[in-house]
Image (cartoon, rainbow, N blue to C red; front, side, top):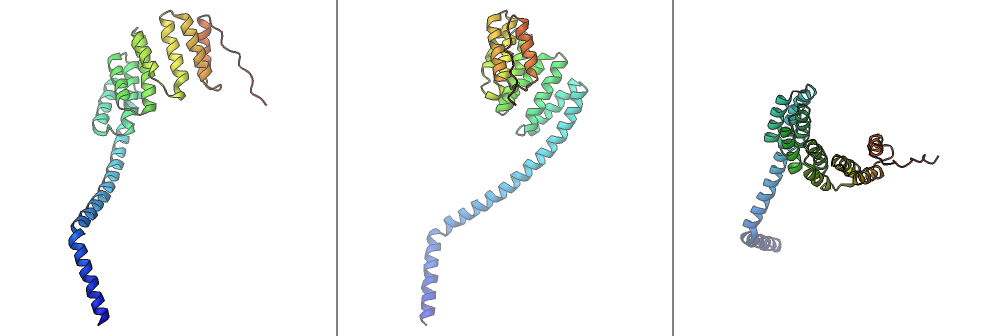
Length: 218
């Protein structure tokens, strides 16, 4: 009898608790289940998008290799419109920019590079800025090009940024400043970087002297 009374008291307490908090708990459980379902759906959606974007990107690479600028731009537009949140969009825009540049379609090249600057991650943004600065250098838009180079702050791109700055300053016949920039590029670049030879050549071609490389310790 005591057991039955205790059980009835527990049941009454449970009913009282449920009457007070049951609705809230139900919503919490529903929200948790919805979040879990949404998480699973989103992961499946992302995987499907990546697969589809990958297929289009493979088509783009064929177009880039064939220097088919028209097709490359069309495929890139499709990737950006449908899969703009994936890394394939950034890579596609960079590839399309190169194809446009090779076709002397500088307007389109600038549009694609600007898209990467506006939408890409830090690494792609830095590369896009340096490449766009190169396009602007060809167009003699020196001030705009220098602003883009100045915006590259990632340490791993310091050498490339200084090299591009040297190119722009040399084109303006600001040779002393260009020499300083090329020296900064050599200082920032890894000793094993094959690009150092080109920077040293440019430095010496405007009257500078590349630092003597010391042999690594045995």
